[in-house]
Length: 298
Length: 308
Image 1 (tube, one colour):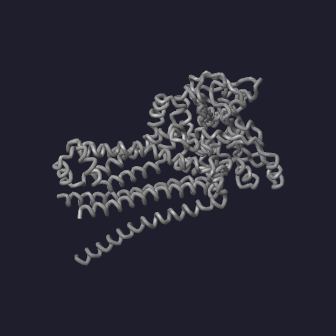
Image 2 (cartoon, helix red, strand yellow; image 1 turned 90 degrees about the vertical axis):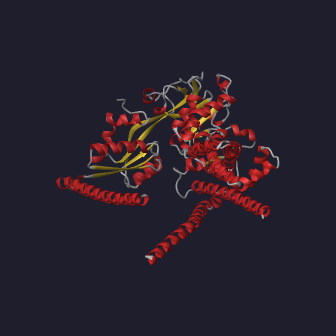
Image 3 (cartoon, each protein chain N blue to C red; image 1 turned 120 degrees about the vertical axis):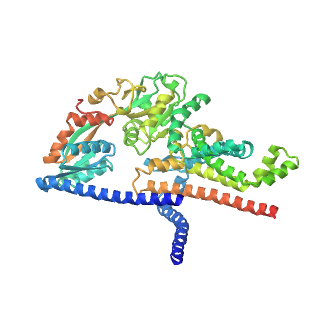
């Protein structure tokens, strides 16, 4: 019996080790395939063409700047919407709302995270684009901002859920101490609870942004997909084309191994690098933060 | 207690598991028996195989036809693949397909090449494809020339006022670049059918991934102009009457004006067989001109050859 148990244990330990390493293996393989299919585009398309402002692949215009700009402006807009709303919701649920309200609100918000993005995109096309066009008197409601709004909606549940957990994990004694020193409730939240939970909050924001930049369907349905390079912030209210939408729209029909195919993979490499950078920054911030808080606590 | 319940559930799942396996095995046997019975009645050689390849514009139509025809004639197998008109015709010249689909006429050099290869493509016009230019129902514009549509899409005309309409910006809608309709519109309308014309879509043209995306925006937005296959136009949008040049007659697209060649943005869709078709290929092509097959043409948004 005892021998049997230890055999089981070996098996389970082995499985866990394999799954742990498989994550690294898969990321490595994805990177390998991206590089293998994407790097030939540097040989096939001259650099000035890649970094030009015109994307029209069926006539060999492969300028990726408009797509990069489109993704960035949509994500920036989504962050500007999702971070304030998400953080304030998290603070409200964790610090201000009574316990019973928290038990209702949190599962509801987490339910929102499970909403398929296509459904959101459909709602966006049918309702929000029209409202936005009328409200702001725009030529069309299919704009970067529409995408940002939907992406904000997609990122908010993630941000709220993770940030609320982090705030909730701050020891009760911190708040009691602050209040005992005469701090108001707002001062306690802003100066004590939030800084103490900062690493968790930063993780929440990064996870939210990560969800936003990789989102495809909703964005493809509402941003209009016009490959125009956004040069001013006001272009948030004009149509843009994101990298994810470009890959999704064009990959289905492109001949495998063609120049266009390789350039689409190059866009994949850029997306991969962006999410890598976001993650590296996030973990750097979290790591430094932990060291400082440890110093304070010790 | 919970332990017991889990055990019971596991036992249940095991039973289910075996039941499913038994079921699958039985049904497989059943299939095998079924499929062998007609085989014993008819000799295997009677089943025919038709290879059909070419234009991506036609591929859905060809697939729908093939599916229906195989239901009517289970002894015939039809394989349909896309790849483009050129690919289909090249395959016909090389003798690897029985029928090539094309959304353009065969070129003289392709006919020459076929002759050198000992094949003789025979042409059938199997359906027609018309592209309707559509605007919001409240837009006051009724008619445009092809040159004007080209100027709108290339970015030379940016306000409906320049065309005699209201003072509103023009929002250009187009299908994605991988759509056959996009390429046809680019070549025949934007570039006016001139081979050396290198006009491009204005960069701020919205590229929408589906016909539904275009319809939704046209219905909602009074600034928008779009184009799509005639079959996708619904009564809550407005079709523009098109003239091929300034003095010409402005014609609204319909099955009739497409068939009598007065509507300018229309094209024939072709199938090419190798030599005069015989046997199963002949009966398949004959069936394509039947009213049942031409009804499928209407269902998929194309214009039938013989309106049923």
